[in-house]
Image 1 (cartoon, rainbow, N blue to C red):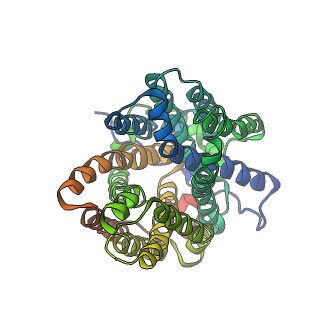
Image 2: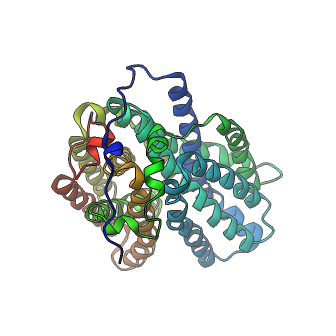
Image 3: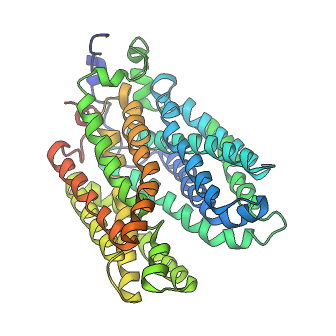
Length: 424
């Protein structure tokens, strides 16, 4: 086995020159570019759930196989590891370009899928590029913005994904009425991405990667190289935190309709109204989460976000009245949306430039998203025995365990340059 890799050279340890207080023109453009790109992470991930009944009717798909279709497409979330990992080898610009173009192409091919097999494969590959794009966007945000605004930038970019999901929920019912039906959801979704794919010509390599690329090029490029460094423990700590968090947050909203109808007697209209109210009420606050992280710090921000998630998810599946459940759903959506900027920020800040993307790929995609993929199957089985309320409410304990790991192992990083925060 190769000897442990050097953590960073003296050159890589030297902080970049102090950045100006105001964002540059390029930083503002990049902010917009990354936000629009991430918007479609939320749009696309929500689109499949929205069009599934129409897709089943169009292709004669049995409900049992519809569930398998969703699970199969979600495997792409894990396989995105192999795309994100490349950003430490090929550079952030090249990989982000590949992911945007790749997602645009396979989203377009999804619209022209002739059968369910072609649809499933196109969606799986689209997810690989989509989650790769999401992760590299977070790395870009961490590396290209001042330390005192890093949390704000990452938070807004993450909130744009939530905005994408809400926009998808609003426009899909209208798109389904067009002659193209469910296919129009993917056709419309590719138009802005084509524009972004063209605009990426103005994209630059991050300053940090450009500076450190010469040193990094001579290092070990084998699979799992970061696990042969002193950063191994930190990778697994963050991976456990991601897995515990996603196991809860992935299902909090997904199964709420099942719970509300089966165990609280809601109608479809009541469920739709509650979800719409909760989503719209929580969205404005999600745009300020990152700013809060820059003011009170990552660790205190984690305390607030994870406690809110536990409170919101547990009460959303245990209270009785429609009003109380809707208010709890607001807290649950706000909490599950707030924990993501916390985890994205920590994951991007706690590793040196030459390992930053690989660490994100291990913690978020390969391990964290495996829990994301497995959790619906586990909870579906458990709900058949115990009911949706007790089952999903129990997962609200997982964010508390994740918070305990954060407070036990992760240092405060607010206001510090990446060269400082990445030191062990």
